[in-house]
Length: 240
Image 1: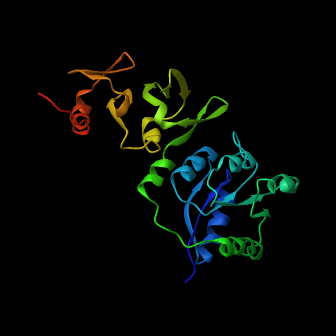
Image 2 (image 1 turned 180 degrees about the horizontal axis):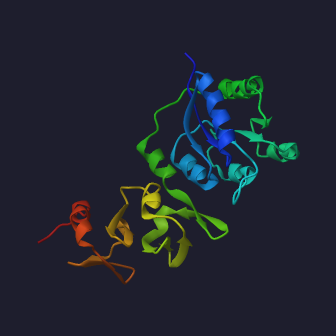
Image 3 (image 1 turned 180 degrees about the vertical axis):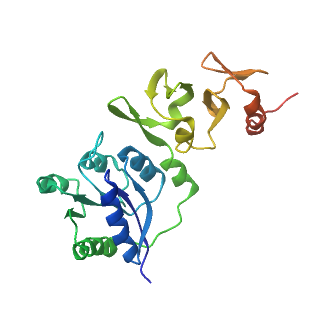
């Protein structure tokens, strides 16, 4: 039986995604996990999941495919570039890439490329809890025109400010445009909890818990009534 190869698509054009999805569905040993038009979302997904193969466009806004591929830290993730621009071929092989497909991509050429991935694929082994936690240790956060790699162990609290959030990281602040829901999907859920409609905190950074607030790095963080019950369930304490 062929080993299933887990793959994702990263391309800012919906038409290109649809073509690749149709090709993948024709190959029984390819398993499409997800498709992304946002490179940063794809990068965070790869950081948190075991992915064998990425079909990646090169010309994308904010973060191009070459830059994205260099940020992928997994040694078991292969990349096949899919682009309409042949001038990127030399640079793409420096990453290195498994193959380089020029759009429009004929199915036989696609099949030849993924066959290379099949030859190098290895049987999957169970991932230990320690390894899972390690994959969750770092996330990529866009702030303005920059993308920062953030160690989640260094985050003490996160504050909502309108359409933005502010991450407090070892005394510095990082501003990013996203929602709490988007961020909480990336953070280790055993280490972070929302305590107020405007605050998420790291449990291991809490210094003091009062009736209506907690203290982190000398700052008082309010505990919202809607969040208090779930918060107290997460806190283990001793004494009377």
